[in-house]
Length: 369
Image (cartoon, rainbow, N blue to C red; front, side):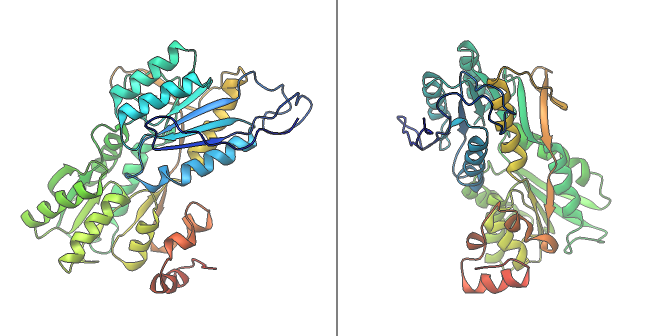
């Protein structure tokens, strides 16, 4: 028999639903491939719960695409849903996926409470959960797949100190625009960059506030900060979405390139800002570092295996050591700005949409067809 066709399903209240239906019908014993020729698992269904479409473009494009590709390799039927920022929607999506018979559920929680509830529900139905990208404090997932997020923060802090606007200065005034307090990753990022910046001689933190992973919030917060502290030399901003807001505010005050600005996620806009000199760097976390590992892990779980993780991460709410697969981040500056494009993480068309940017891209090693 042939493969199941690609299908798209829509649950009530679901912002985005994508199904990659790739489970082979019939007996595939004796065939090679990702499962090494073992018999096909009784269940080949995997559910993926993504959080929103606003905090980072990765949830809209990079992750669904990479997860889909890996599902093809492992001959899994993967259901990918996006909650569009609503915890209530995400819980409804989880229930629908469990009803659909998934054996493994990848969870990017919107907050610890709702994430914990989803994992508890899954456990009641013998569905194995994997914390994907974000740890769910107090949750029950037996595995966590992410980047080393403290290291992400350390890399952010270290790179900020090397920005040309501040490097070598005896006195630096800086502010921080942090991620959402409901996201454990934001806490880990801050632990990392504060461990670096707090030890820098002559560096003075003037303000520290959450931007909540939201562009409008970050713009409002930084506008207030700049109004209160016009002598800011550097902005430790947790991701590119919020960094764009900071760059916009600085531009409105004719301060583009005069203040060191950080970032994370290697978005198209972040790469543009780096080439233009408005943003010093971003942190690149290739989605393959999470998606490839998570889908392989899901396939092993469905096959009845109990993989051993190479690391553990302590749950801050109860001290549980969660078996973890943690990838290593990459700092992107103008010197290697082309890498996310050459890797296929983001397209040249997205980074270079205008004639002006195409010239800038060409000068920085990004080829536009």
